[in-house]
Length: 241
Image 1: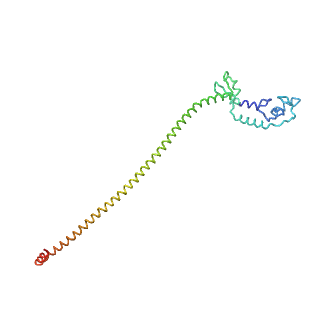
Image 2 (image 1 turned 180 degrees about the vertical axis):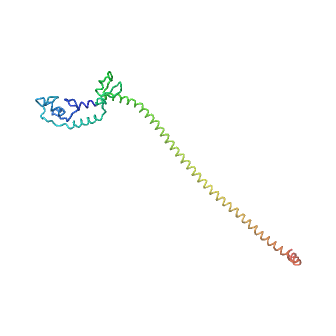
Image 3 (image 1 turned 45 degrees about the horizontal axis):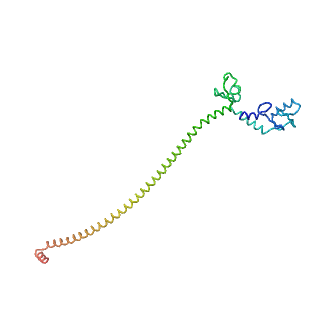
């Protein structure tokens, strides 16, 4: 892809990337300097490719092509270059798995080695990498499926725990309500029993108190009789008989 692009952006005269490209009426483009030098050696203004004569000695600048060439050169300038020859790394040594420039391939160190273009080598390595991704993606799908089931199980456990917790709370709320009602009922029964027994005891104590009072009076009267003289005692005694 890059070599085809480079070919499209190369001047047919100098075979290098266009510099200040101009376009002729026949739609062929050239570096302005290359075209002027070519015309300087000719008697007419013919196109170096199709020989069609140009009506202008100064053909217009091809701005769109110029922008494309500048972008291509800027991108290529950012690419790494050979440390020995300062050339673009355009060749891949299959035997040593190294990136080389076009001059490195003539070196003794790489004689009889197998070479690929960078694009071809990249395609081969990318295919290998893509192939290695297939089992990984398959494993990822399997793991995600297992994880999905685990997520469902975890959600079921959480929902079940929440449901059980609600049931426990409802059960104990009912139990608390029952115990409170039972407590209240027993306290009422206790108070009623207490009041009943207290009333019985109150009546019994009242009766005993009245009996004590009566006995007290009898005892007092008897003691008074005992303190009286013998005549009075006998008189009262006989009367009380």
